[in-house]
Each structure stands twice: as structure tokens, then as C-alpha cells.
Length: 377
Image 1 (tube, rainbow, N blue to C red):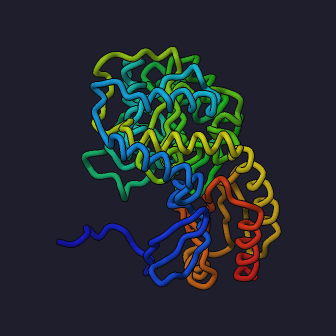
Image 2 (cartoon, rainbow, N blue to C red):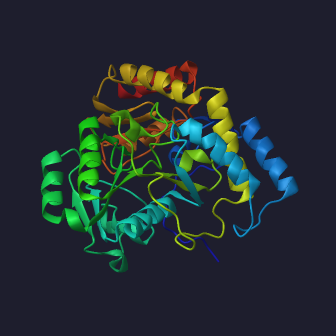
Image 3 (cartoon, helix red, strand yellow):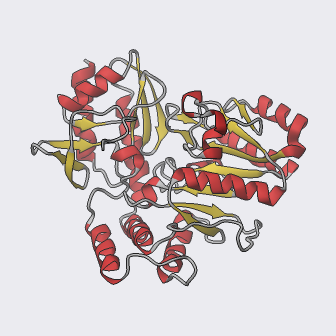
């Protein structure tokens, strides 16, 4: 047997991690400014994270959602205040794609409608409806294609208004990332998010805020959408809330009522996943990591804009896109193998992404800046 060859791989194997440093099989250390697609939020092998998971595994690794699970209730009590939406309801699942899938399904249940509005450049996952709402025909199989998803241009208010005027009575949901990650760190404007909220209110649609990558405090607020000063009906989460342990969730406004059998999952909200998420929530609260993300992000973006050969710097907090005046892939390879720093790619061939742990320091930032300055010069 061999692995199904669907990932282009760098010739390096990471075998150890601590904080924002990882080591390969040869003992070479690397600065991790990508966190495995924004997954590592409190640093690799954080002591609280290891303690929480080890303790839980020593007592019980799994039982089903057919019984009470106390660690789920504990997570709700901590995640509510941390997220700023303590009156919302939480449904736990396993991944970002599954979170978006469940959010859109719930919106359809709630409205009795089936049309979904998504953004050009969006990435919402690879499962059936999530990939149908993803603007990438290369990963959408024929079975996923549907006329129920309509794409519009991010930040084009007039186009969105025209679509609602024409089809508003059929629209179940608008789904959008507060900052498009895979799409090249394209930021939804406050005015646009406010327009989404207003149109969803006017036509009875559900506003789904995909916060899988731009949530968990990464932008200096728990959900990046909340910079606009309006609430979504459903927030979807994954990646950073588990710091590497697979977990997804949707946070649901109180006016959307649950019903037995409406949603379900075998592994969602299992004991180990909740232990991981609890560790993240505790560390984020105690160490004020949302504030640190905002502070370090402001510093980085200010300094990045001073570098040569940089066309544009986009983002908020520690979700940053750097667009070069040339393709970024060769540069990222040099950064990895010459400077030993991990960064991420995007669908924009000239743009690479910075998605480090939220507890990075000024020292980490200065090391990255020095390496960028050296290579870009």
C-alpha cells in the first residue's frame, strides 16, 4: 500500500515542535510562521495543552453524544465569554468543512429555502455543499455542482443588493470569510459586512460567518467579522480552536431553534477534542492572546510595508498576506531552505501568508523581518 498522492510536498519532515519552533528529522530548527494552515494558535506542545489531553486520555478517550459529556459544558462556559457571544448556542463537529456544511444545512432548515450566496475567491472546504460554495472548479467534482449556489464579488455592495432584489425570497444564506485566506488575504470591508447583515435581516436570510481561518482571535477580535460591529447568525470555527487536535464548531444565534435529529455527529465534541479546545480557551484568556495578536499584527504590518519588492500587505492581526512584485513560490522555497522559516501559499500566485501562533513575540517577528529583508533585497 502507498499514500494517495494528492499533496505536493517539501522534502522535509517535522518531528518535534515547541512554541513557534519546529525541528526536522536532522535536528534543524525552523521558525513556524504558518502554524499548519492557522491551526497552531497557542504554540506547539503548550504545557497546558499537553496536560489537558494527557489527563483526559488517562480517564476516558471517547464516549458518544447519546450521554451527557461534562467537558462539552465546560467548553461552552469558557468559549461563550471569550468569543463575546455568550448567548449563542454551540454545536460541535470535527473540521472546518463540516462546520460550514452544518451551518448551511441549518440555514436551509431555518428558512425553508435552498439558495446560498457565496463570494468569488472563497474557500469553505471540500465536502459536498462546502465545496460547492468554494470558488475553485479544480476541486469541485461533477457531483458537487449545483445551481443553488450563486457567486458574487466580495465588497461589491451593488451586485449583492441586485441579487437580493431579484432572488431574495429564495436565499437561505450568505456565507463569507471575514478575510479570505486561500483567496490571498482579501479583507471583507466593514461596510460590506454591514450590508450583508442588513440584507439578511430584510429578506429573512441567514448570515453565516466563516471564521475557520480568520477566527479564534487571530485578527485581534475573536471573530474577524465582528470588526464590522454587527453579529452573524452563525459563526463557523475549526483550526485554531483545537491547536492541532481535530475539532470544528458552529456558534448559533439564540433565535435559531434546535430540534432533535436536525444535526448529528459521531466524533464531534468528543472528550479529547473538548480537552484540547479547553486548553486553548484557557491559555487565550489568561495570556491575553487576542490582544497580543492585534499588537504583533500591527507591528508586523507596519514593518512589512517598508520592505523592498513588496506590492501590498493585507490583513488584520496575525492573518497577513504579502503580495510581491513576482511569483511567491520560489521566494517561499528560499525562505524555507535558506532561512529556515515556514510561511504559507495562497491561490494568488504572488501572495504568501503569515499565520503564526497568537503568542509570538517581538523577537520572532524581528527574525522573520530580517530574513525577508535579506532575501527581498
